[in-house]
Length: 409
Image (cartoon, rainbow, N blue to C red; front, top):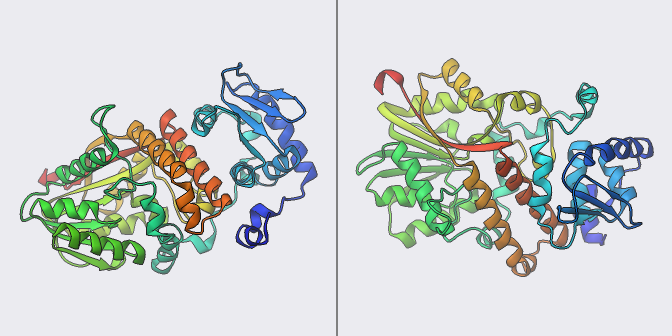
């Protein structure tokens, strides 16, 4: 590791020294891998895994470091080992193809006899990641304020950073993103003259689309970087949008339609009641809500809701994926709203992520020139492939959810 990398990535530059835990990790991993259709290969010629010659290959480059990281922190060490280059994919193996068989077996991959020790392995969510008003701003800035130029290198021209909705295999990403946006706006009943509130502006694509329908649009964000580019894009599109740098908890007024795309994952379980109660408070009589939300099955949510994983440490601090049941329960307990329609875009998200990763890798030289180093590259490769694999096998899903007051439906 270079000095710069050491300063920037202290957890990656220094391999933990945990010989006992490393041996335990190795003892657990071998029989586990031998039941998965992959190939695990080592420099000395040793091979693990149930996969044949055509199966996805994982090459363990530095076994000692790999097992040390895995032993020190099972949930985070696997991704950190990839970031450090302790393991990589074999020639011709796509990273998401390798991760998918593991994602498919994630709830059963650890023997049931060992699952009772989960409480000793899971780390609690850091208090600093709480999504209070101050904490939310820090958490959002950590990801979305990295650089507008970075996101422009792998997103489509609409700058949409959420699941697209493909109509066919031939449809391009940009038009699929606009179809997704139209799906949200249609669910929320946005037409000419509608008073629309968007919670989480992104880079402005939805607000532009809503304004082009003739709606009166207010969009809010707490990302300075996103706000600056969104304002520029509004001017270029020739639309009048009221963009406010404000937390959702501080919004006032009444709106006929409220929309929010993949925002709930950044709200945090502690604040879901506040988030939905705020929406309920702001929604005018007869109004409709449409949110796009990444979800997982309820039993998985209950097991992981308080644990700290790789994605939260490196990509989305403060992030938590809800279940459909958790959303329904929160609405019932804290609002007058209920889900009245839903559609799944899970497989569409797998394709969206694959296209983002292709663009990221294709444009890596430009991204690298912006000041992002090799460790960052491997981190984002793992993030995009890890999520793609999860959606591909159905471990996670994403829904467009329409909400309204039942008595007004």
